[in-house]
Length: 410
Image 1 (cartoon, helix red, strand yellow):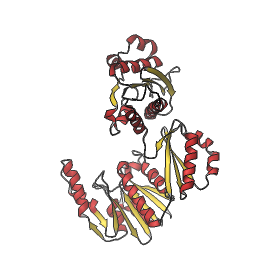
Image 2 (cartoon, one colour; image 1 turned 30 degrees about the horizontal axis):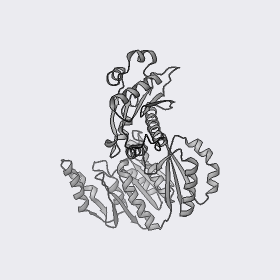
Image 3 (cartoon, helix red, strand yellow; image 1 turned 180 degrees about the vertical axis):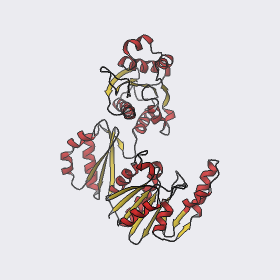
Image 4 (cartoon, helix red, strand yellow; image 1 turned 90 degrees about the horizontal axis):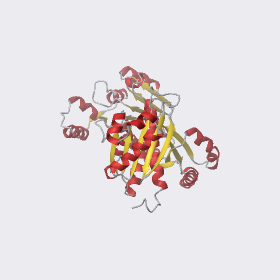
């Protein structure tokens, strides 16, 4: 099945927004054995829609973006009108949109009415996270899918569309996978050269993100899939933190909750990013006690009792200060585990002795402190993200390492 993906929006063409939707859609389609053959990024102009639609002869065409209520959101009506199919306005969709506005205590505008336009012969793809439902319809042998643009809205709507495609095409491929942390894609691929030949019935695809790697296993043979995944797990379990739907912070919160331990963190260069990821997990309040952002030296002294003479002697980015932050927080917070992060995220502030990307991590685990030193590559944002991932994995590893200790388990 030849497949095309069209992502819509001037912000994608100007570089203001990164086109993550193409990657998401391509990965989802790959999991059911469908490859994307061609992709387009177009402006929110009717002439651009016509140009690509006139050119395309693919069997499956997926549009993402432009389903909103504003004047430049023209995907729905433009694509439907191009194929000249009979339409209707769906009252249930209008009622759902109005309910969202009522809940937010905002008046619904008439411009939202166009979001309820559907071909008569179509499937509504529900969107519980926004006002833009997706659409699935056929024109002859072509399958057309319209998806919302915001990534958090795209994911669930895309999943529903994928299930429709699987059922219609009788696709029996099964996809599962692992998420890994603490290793790089290149080193993993070097180690996996022999693995692929041992499991010829299974397609194994790596997808690297900042600090994490997904390995997705796809096959129509359940037994072969199970064997490949067991083999992979036995070889690389030290890096595996969960399945495809798991998050590193979610795993950490679960481990803390399972063992009745409470965490507190003190952040400098990460500026609350570590705390934010942890408290984004439902139920985190049971195990996450507090998070301090002690960015300036004055804050380190005021809230963590870090000594001025130590800051002058060692500098804020040092193993000594990371330890002092961590240990003093442990004394003050009454938490079971405390973590500190202090580093140079750049682009300024580095030196030959302390380069940009240098980060120290402290972890006080029930009174015993360990310090880690890392130097990360990348820009300021990447260094901060990599620091957060390292801190989360540091927590995961120490919780797993000590979970059989009688003094650890309550």
